[in-house]
Image (cartoon, rainbow, N blue to C red; front, side):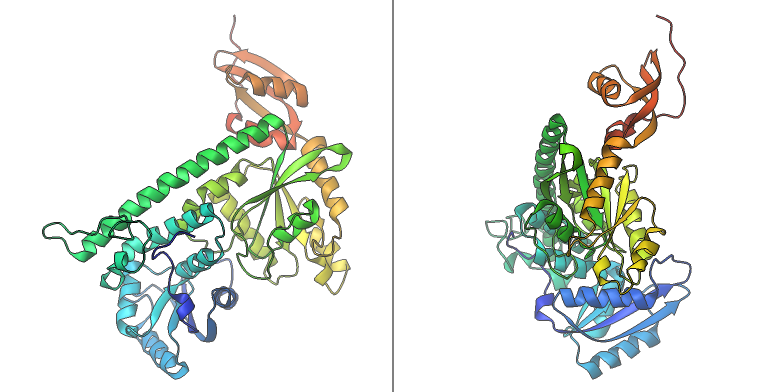
Length: 446
């Protein structure tokens, strides 16, 4: 991973106190207790020991410290009693909230929010140059509005950019500039450079996707809540050796493998980063190049941990994220994973009734994989979906493909393009979605 001060100091901190806050009227997928339990798992993944916790329900946030004055004093006393060095909040703190809380809790304790914690985990698990770039960008964008004197002199703490400064390469101050202003400018330059590098990554991925489309191999993206078993499923289907661990965000970098489908067909399966509730917006933006693998897929396999007590809430979080990244138009097949952990085998059949287009499997025990591959093949090749599109004349390849692979019920040639109503295999829906139309344009006389 690139050097420089882009990692937090969480690895140096051991004992943590977690804090949950529920603001009246703010929607939440998980209950406060369940969300704090998930935060504890995240903390353990980052190398922290959670030794206590507290929560507060508020009608409205305190403009200075988010939580009330009494709760701040309670946390201070509890932190002293438990000898904690990290106070970990379950939501993203505003820059002001974080500054004020750090003043109250003192220099010997770090105030860390959920976003910073997830960024630290991503930094620990980024194993490729691309993944490191994405995490580094997200961390700098998170830190920039929070820059205070406590964050200054970043250039002297690491050597990432070369030259006299580790954050952009320029360490000299102009007339009248404070060190804080210099650091802000240097981080701004670093962000710009990282975005340029990631644009190159995105362009390279785009070329790879174009090659795959020319090969006419359907692309299937595995999506799901973190630790649902996506990597284990890819290993089982493709005989791959993708890194697998029973922890959150074990893998960040997309991995693509070729898988044989029934009938002698082939498809490309891509494992992607796991989702989570309250996924930081900085991460969604930084991982744009990776998430494009999902947006360009022909089919999504939504892998669900059917044994998790919050299975429905986790599934909803994934669907919300797919909507956020504009991938909710792609056909989805739900994979209910980990059925081998169910005490009652009938529970798997009951779970199927709660999800549309679902298959129950155990990726670890390789149970149900034949049924899953058959369902994928049916979804891609046999199930014809109704569609109505207006294709510009310059999209001749898509027009020809519709005739070749689909069934045309009605076609009209208009001034703006070819209007087609018909049915196409599910694997082709994503290609035509941008041209979909509900209205029927009038035919033009030649």
